[in-house]
Figure 1 (spheres, one colour):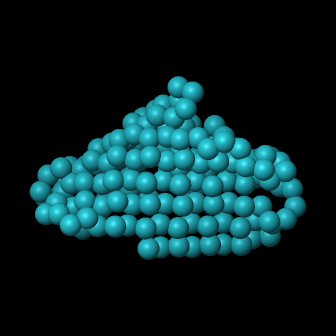
Figure 2: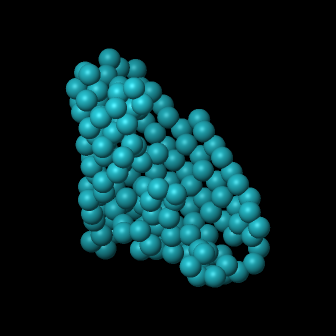
Length: 154
């Protein structure tokens, strides 16, 4: 379990992660991620507000283009199931779901928007566990896309 919070003038950020290894001969992990950004005082300028996909590496809210949703406060929850498809770990797969909500200028949260999808992992550095990630995700209102990255989403 990993959790980190940071308070800056006017904002508080929280990043909590957990990983549960399932009993199996192959690697199987259920991973969870909670990310929060709350405005504690003041009224930040629009472009300083959090947005979907606005984490450090742009990994949140798969299923939506970065910046599709923006608000004063943001809560994002993601769960991912990871499994090795080959005994040597060269090829793996993931299935994931996420949901997030953003608040309006007055701090009132709106609807939760969901996303989900699946992907493949190709290991290219076994010593460090580095992967090439290819994910396809869907969101509400026809949003969808292909997401490429290095290492896991979280």
